[in-house]
Amino acid sequence: MSEQEQPSDESATASESADDTLVSEANVASNGAEDAGPGTPAESSSVAEASDAGQVESSEGDHEEEAAQEESGADASPVLVSEAEPEEPESAMQWYILKVQVNRESSICDALLRRIKMEGLEQYFGEVLVPTEDVREFTKSGKQRIVKRKLYPGYIVVNMIINDDTWFLVRETPGIGDFTGAVGKPAALSDAEIGRIKQMAKIGEETSKEETAGIKTAIKFRPGDRVRVKEGYFQNFEGDVETIDESNGRVTVMISIFGRATPVELDHWQVEDV
Image (cartoon, rainbow, N blue to C red; front, side, top):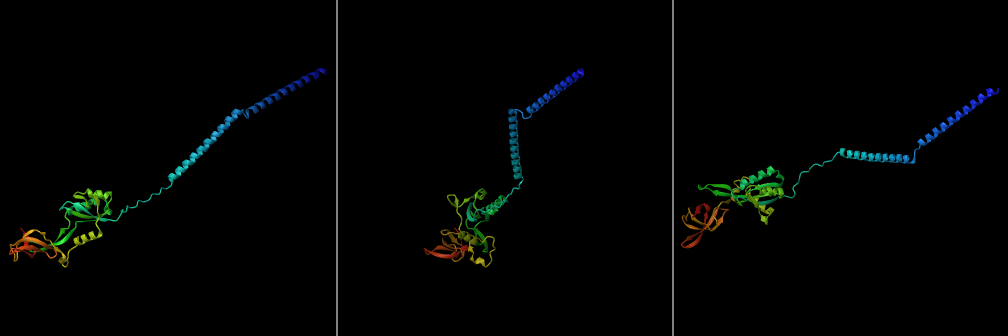
């Protein structure tokens, strides 16, 4: 009996030893798992900093994305463009006198009008006129005709607004000298002055027979001119022109009769230059 019980004790001892070994290995494994889980303080700090940096970068990326969306939205929004309004004249037009080449007044007017149209400055210009008046002339055969005589040879008048563009356009037109005025400053005509010029000129209007009575007669003589009477009672007498009546076409000549200067009124066609 004792021999049979001895193997049983040995078996129990071996079993207990194996159980202790398994418990020890389990404790070691558990301690290893705990050591690997939380990690060291340095490793935890690095992980936290990396996480914070990631959040900052993510936040900056979100801000940049929002800014890009705002810029994209601003670019995509419709841009309101105001329509350009036509430029209005700076002030009212006024009449000015221009010095031009004598005997070229009409052609210079035409050239100025062409340049105004070419430059597209019609809104700054009105009429361009050669001041004239209707006068009566008699031919050698005694027939009369109504012609236009220049009031101011070598000058034209223009209705315009003066600015840099119009100033240079006028000054650069061939045949035009300068504006009339003091110290290089153009002097505008008054309403009364331009009204009188227009009334005398009657530009573009046909003169009726009823109106010819008030037209002056063109007389080429001037007071002080020496003339000779070619027709009438004092034919071949010579004298000096005293006065001129353009309304009636007559001249008064001082003729020496019996040694005394006597005024004689004659029709202008009855006398001639000496």
